[in-house]
Length: 192
Picture 1 (cartoon, one colour):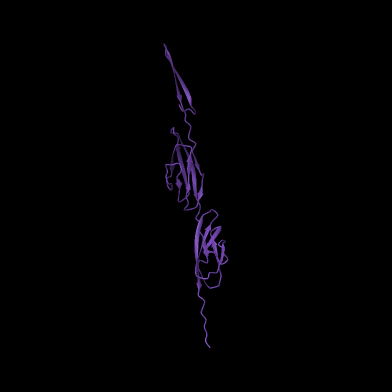
Picture 2 (cartoon, rainbow, N blue to C red):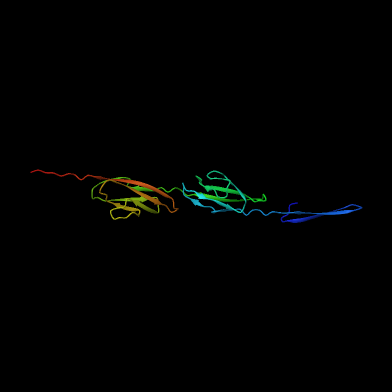
């Protein structure tokens, strides 16, 4: 038999002289309601995400690639490419149910500065332009005390390497560097 719910079965055996009746209860245990959170997360390269399964007594994850521990309810997932994970949850009664989640890897942010390097005289100004992100933070600050923006105007008094940290629309981060060399002013002399 394969009942959908707990059922009592009765059988009666009769012979020409006597009869007997017997009853057996078949208990149907419910399937575990296995659920994974977060559902289908997206992360930046080099990031990770904690997956949490619930609804069962024990868990087994596959594939195991990129998981901190494939036999616990809440492993850390650190895949190097978009990966679909399946968790198999087993109830205390031995009933099994699955759930899936896909961890999507965003493309890496690639931040650049133009010009990549620059040489100039003291008191000159150059505009450094960042690309590859949606927001930028520069260091050190420029002569006006600012440290944000795609275009960054600088006039250092000594040779300085500027760094920009760019964050793209997905929240992924990259950085770039641009050295600015200051030439020494010429020493002018004359005689009469």
